[in-house]
Amino acid sequence: MRSRPYTRSVAAGVVAAAALALLPATTATAAPAPVAAAADTCRGVSTVGLHCGYSTSNAFAQRGSKGAHVKEIQALINETTIWPKQTGKRLAVDGDFGPTTDSAVSWFQWYYGSEALSDGMVGPKTWEMLRYGKR
Image 1 (spheres, rainbow, N blue to C red):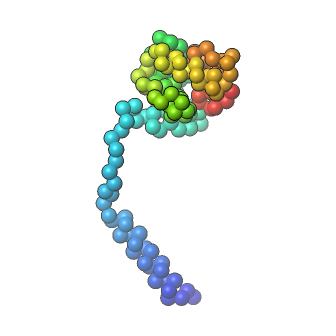
Image 2 (image 1 turned 135 degrees about the vertical axis):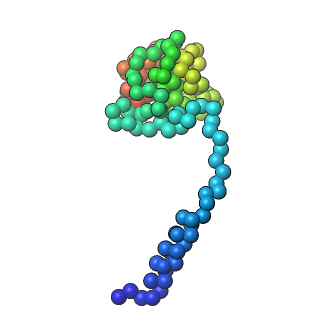
Image 3 (image 1 turned 120 degrees about the horizontal axis):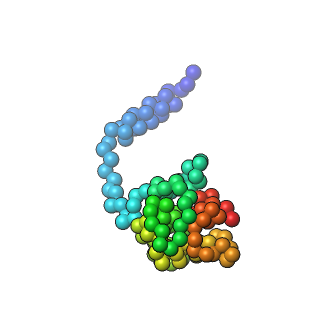
């Protein structure tokens, strides 16, 4: 048989939890950053590895490429690498594989892979590094 102090402690805890559940949430939230919200939720997906919500495709990409797969590359570099910290800027997640994305991809390949891979083109090996962190 339990003592009264224990019973009172449990009862007080239940009452406190119920009271907190009834309080309205009053925390302020900041407006989302200009980069699309999907980029803030890069997560693991068992069939494709890391995924930022733009594309599950591993389509080839190079300077001049456009599309959702390019947005995925840009978001993965922003959210899963030290590129923003190293350069002091984030890639625009705009789906346009321009000179800045080209530089970021070449840097990513060099930093996380090897100089031999540092060609600025996103093919199977670079996708594997982006999605799974494999070299």
